[in-house]
Length: 270
Image 1 (spheres, helix red, strand yellow):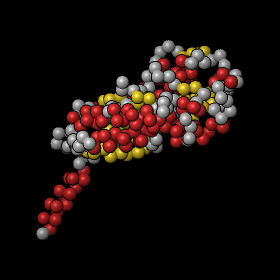
Image 2 (tube, rainbow, N blue to C red):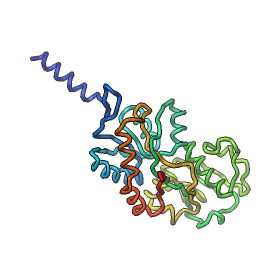
Image 3 (cartoon, helix red, strand yellow):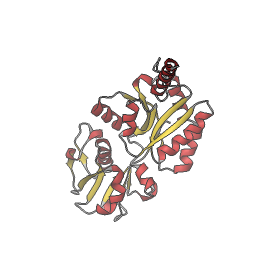
Image 4 (tube, rainbow, N blue to C red):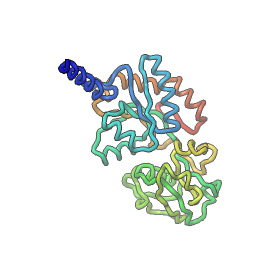
């Protein structure tokens, strides 16, 4: 009897150890269920709608919601997620470089236009010379802020690698803006401490800000910071990944985004 008990325990452990949705033998993901990581806010809301569309195609999508930008990638790399949907290409490139990973984009999703907000001023041109401007302290979203300011004509960046520029790459700053690097998730709580600050859309909406109505400067649609569905390299050609992308890029999801966010989140796959 003890021998039978040990055998049953071993079988149970084998089931538990198997990845969240993967077929251990083939390395492919489960074609019936995926665990998808998202950040709280618009990405969460949209993938909830994607899950409804996918369910009609026989695919169950379970969400895991994160409150920061690093864990959804590290958790995916560790095999505790099957995919995630929350990041743009420059951020993914930097993560892969920093962590020696090979996560890959498999389908465009949305553009969350980053905005610059202020509790003191209603227009960028009203900012005084020497104004203190907060920006995210992670490399890609910090450089994204600088990219927006350059595109609007407020600063000039060095020509090389503008998508990953830092405050040290500002070569012309005629208004003498002072740039303050802050934790992205905390910037909305610190708006009163600076003259203006850039905020990711997800954090802005969570704080009750409307990017279209409240931002004093909003990222344009020519931005390179389009978001993607991301998977491990070994799974990029799995049929279930194609099914996930198809559900996301469906007409139903497009209509939901347009009606729910009214221009503060933009379709990127068309």
